[in-house]
Amino acid sequence: LQGGGLQGRLFDTVLDSACLQCFDPALQVKYLENIAPLMAPKGCLVLLVVCNQSQLRSWCRGVKWMKEHLTGLFTKERGWVINSMEQSTFLENIPMVRLTKGVRTFEPVTPSPCILMKASRPRKG
Image 1 (cartoon, rainbow, N blue to C red):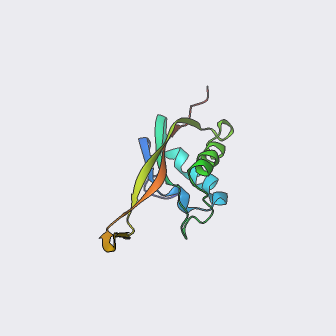
Image 2: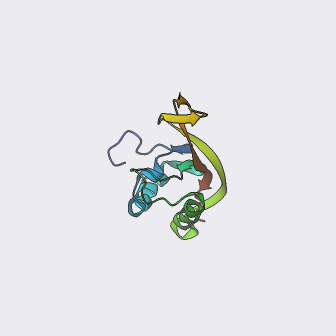
Image 3: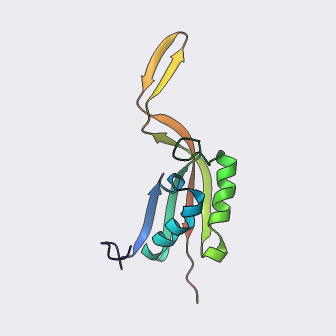
């Protein structure tokens, strides 16, 4: 964020809509370290994390695995508190073909399992 237009600005809500899972797990800590300075005191990070495998997230192993991964990523030691975590559905902008009773239909999006999570960074002191 150094030298960027967001430097020094604080937000009550930061939304990550299917971005975190695009990074290799080894880079996710650094990604979160770059988001943390944008959060106002008592601010909230809202995450939508897609949990299926694709070329961008070949390391993902499903919803249960992702919940465990996020719990290990958003730790007290790293300055995070997970306020809520629930399973949901994310409509990916990937066309899908359905075959029902021999009839092929095309859908403009693909529903994928995801996790909706809210996390905060309690201030020290």
